[in-house]
Amino acid sequence: MRPFSYERASDVQRAVIGGRETRQGQTDAPVQFLAGGTTLIDLMKLDVLRPARVVDIKGLKAAHASIEATPQRLRLGALASMAATARHPGVLRDYPVIAESLQLAASAQLRNMATLGGNVLQRTRCPYYRDTSWAECNKRDPGSGCTALKSFNRNHAVLGVDDSCISQYPGDFAVALVALDAAVELTGPTGRRMIAFETLHRPPQGKPNVETTLMPGEVITAFEVPAGPWTRRSLYLKIRDRSSYEFALSSAAVALDLNGGAVRQARIGLGGMAYRPWRAKEAEALLVGRPLNEGNAMAAATAALAGARTHGGNDFKPELGRRTLVRALLQAAAMEA
Image (cartoon, rainbow, N blue to C red; front, side):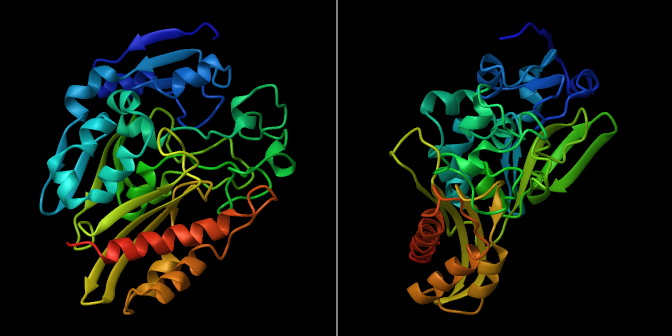
């Protein structure tokens, strides 16, 4: 690990002023925010991230870690822990897809430590990004190339990629947020703003080293999820190589509003498949007004993966993604809500 300066922020205003050079989601950012630290410290040890200064924002927890469930919305403070959110009665009752996405992530020890804001900003587990002995990585060294295109790429993305990067977004919680039309509250040097969570993560577009739309110095302070008739009939299904402490090969966040056996509204997020948290709007639209049977679920899954682009080692992923989504839709349809 390289030398760096360290400071603690006593309030959010001091944090964003002290972090004006912070560009969360960029490898070359000279300043990084530290919350739970479960990803940042790892990447600093690996010499992937090399900040000159680290701004510790754990001291802001008292003001930005509350969890509020009302009839209109769910508001989650960005410094709430994954564990506390997953066991909150309002989340368990009214937003099971969120609780399950957190329960199935990482380990119990990491969930106790990791924050919601840090979790959605976690970096890819692409081995070529995390191992600096691989020279070609556009995410780490812009313009150098993408080793994964021609090497082992079993775990890499098939949706939202281009030739500049095929890394997979590793998170689970973000997949639930994107499915539920969540918004994210940001605080920066120029004040506070709200954006759709779906716009937080950028597509590669030839610049995979710039992963988010955060402005310099901005910190995530909260997430807001609108209440809806679909949030109780929701679930997160995660398919992985082993049953614990493993990232998804394929996952689906599904929320349904049914009228009898027909779909009134559907919300679908895909994980393990894409470069960033992925909303499958084509699949949602196809389901509306139809009974949720296996045939219609497969038609929706086919639409969701229609744009898949594989690179040899991950050729199996579109079919796995389709099967995962069909299973998730049928399980959600069978839930009591």
